[in-house]
Length: 219
Image 1 (cartoon, rainbow, N blue to C red):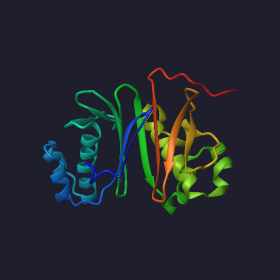
Image 2: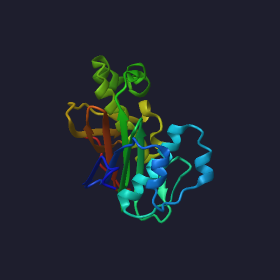
Image 3: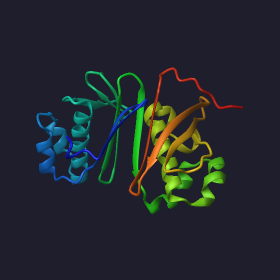
Image 4: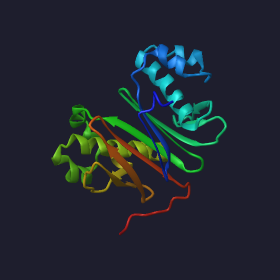
């Protein structure tokens, strides 16, 4: 575990593992170490990157929880453990994989590498107020963080947050190396307080909520 682990930490939101996967598929199979996988499902993945992600997420979760795991996906694509011992969320971007788990809270995590192409996409996922607040800066790091925060909200809420520009709004914030970002789910008027860390390679956003989360935006 020590050889493959890039970073592991505990927060109120759960336990988190971040891993930069540099291993080959053959090396990843060795790291499964008794962890079973669905070979038929794996072999359907013709893209090598997807195969690496498939193996890597299972290894990461196994190491994070220190046990063999079986996980599946709901109709909305949300991962869940067969034994329901933890709530989990998974993300990957280029070589990076991030996983989070909590025994009770609903969790979400997203890792995104910084890429200039977001400057061509941000108008699709920001609403008018966000465009006024963030659009003129054309700050790749800030825009990537906003996208990542919206991904986390979608992973927590599901289909009621599928439209990033109409259903989710990131409230104004000052970009730091790490901090908190407040994100409004517009239909319910609930505010979710997410946490983020950024490095030279990526931004990581994560959060966890009770199912009865009721915090509302201040009028």
